[in-house]
Image 1 (cartoon, helix red, strand yellow):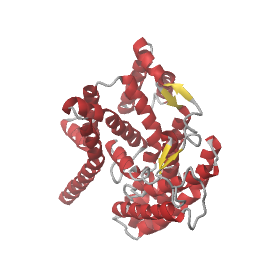
Image 2 (spheres, rainbow, N blue to C red; image 1 turned 90 degrees about the vertical axis):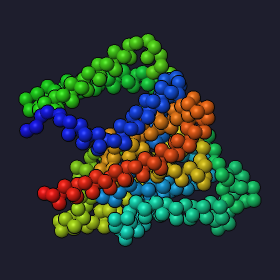
Image 3 (cartoon, helix red, strand yellow; image 1 turned 180 degrees about the vertical axis):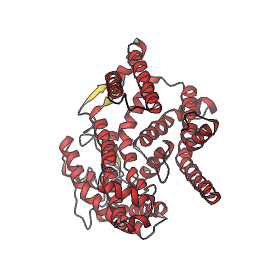
Image 4 (cartoon, rainbow, N blue to C red; image 1 turned 90 degrees about the horizontal axis):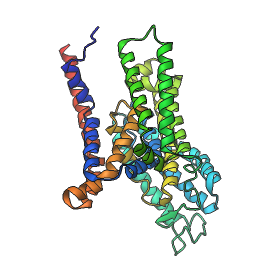
Length: 419
């Protein structure tokens, strides 16, 4: 058995994680150049993690099921926005309003996901571009609904929501006094307590696991446990430093929102231990083998898209209750692009994605979003350059990741031919 970490291993690791490594470096450089206070960056980063992570996690199941990156999550986001407008019109606010949005958006997302899955089954091998075009098509229907049908075919009288002519919904819907912060404000704690107690829990868990698995533990796992223990100790004692503690106290964490995100992570882990989850994996690895094994491939793929669409709808609800404003005709447009860019930055590919990669991607992607305008201003005396860079990153990282994936598949095919 090979235990030593060779130069070839380092090269392979670097190639496999090239996108992530590049963005780690960009985030470090961007933060140092921006000169922003760490408290401000942490506060904004925590808000963005709570706001966006659920949407990114919604991408994982279709990837494992071999359907690539689901640009069609924008359709789930539209379902959520349709329901938000209805609930706002009815005047149901706070937690009851948010729960009602979840309840009503679920069957709508299931319906949209079913039809999306049926169409994607007709275009096997081209799911990503098909889901993107489906998103554009659904956006046209969405515009038709809220610009023409509401106020004509669909009766509605609400001067706050509707355009002055009585037909169509306004560009902006204020959720303040509605579902704004309905989830985020349930429980909030300073980041200090979260980090402090997580470090203690992690250290206890590492020690308990090490004792439990002491006799059967290999060197690799032992090294990981030591690493986690050292990090936990450093974080614990770092919290005792006054300057660090003061910064962490200023940052408020939406605990309940993070618990919901944690439950989705747990769901993504547990579902792959079920029969359905194993079917997802089998179909993703080889549809022909899956069909020969008695798995209904088309039905399994539809189920994957339905779950992803429902989760995307819930994720958009979390996103908008945090933003507090619904841009009726624009809030959903970049949902798929930004979520896919984030998960790719975390190290995912069109055939493999995990919770860790999704969370890491959200942190790196939005860290860059926070620091790039100020960094652009300091470097070039023009903040707009930072804004351009953020848009470039969104599209560029998807392009680079897809090219790298195609290149790896080409190299792998050549190696198999040699064998």
